[in-house]
Image (cartoon, rainbow, N blue to C red; front, side, top):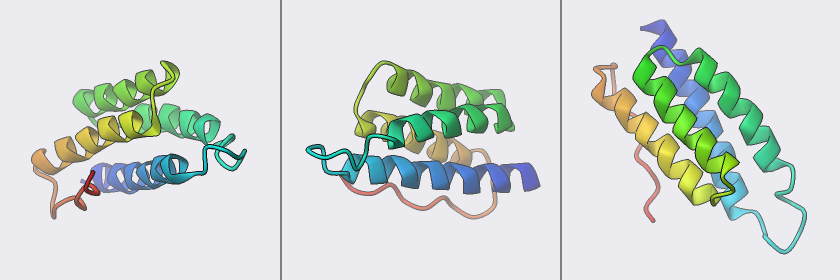
Length: 100
């Protein structure tokens, strides 16, 4: 249970980073380093995932990032991982996804 809680905390931090990247001004270099940092965080998150299903979800987010998709596409995959955590019987419920 502790592993799931720690994973959820890390997932929420990565989601926050992706959201920051999403809201960064595209006309400036403000978000230039964020995709690289997010990629590193996603690799670490995938290796720490406590279940195969969660690992697959994080890897889908990695694939979206590697394919050059938008921050919103990466975030959508991570929201799916968050939903998987919520349906996996963890205590409490995950924070809601921001509205689109």
